[in-house]
Length: 186
Image (cartoon, rainbow, N blue to C red):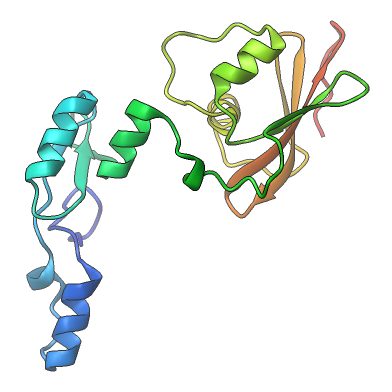
């Protein structure tokens, strides 16, 4: 719940508090129902974030940058995934293998595939300092917007094409080795 914009957040609503107010017939005052959430700097390490979340009255923290601008939220699940990686139960792979090499040497890759695994398979170097862990994150980092099916980008000798979107999630990419010629965008 915020006043006017995300830089003036009052707190976080929990569905059970809203439902309880409705059952009791109380007026729905969102500001009064909002619970305060801890505010964490965007540079906090995972252990300190987990400690702050453990002590919070709600399982969520607000993340702000050095200028006090709201950057997003973090939950215990987010922190655990950052430490331990994605859990199998969180990956929607429908029994499809995450990486399939095709006869022509191209790869059909799940967006949820860890980017380190992709780099190993393709022999592609990656920056050590990066803000993503999956191939979908790599695509978002390169494109700088939510792509549409058919969009392409290039990294070195590899062309990446978004071949399947599942709503706003990059589900599948086709990755092909290309010659040194210029890449043609759709």
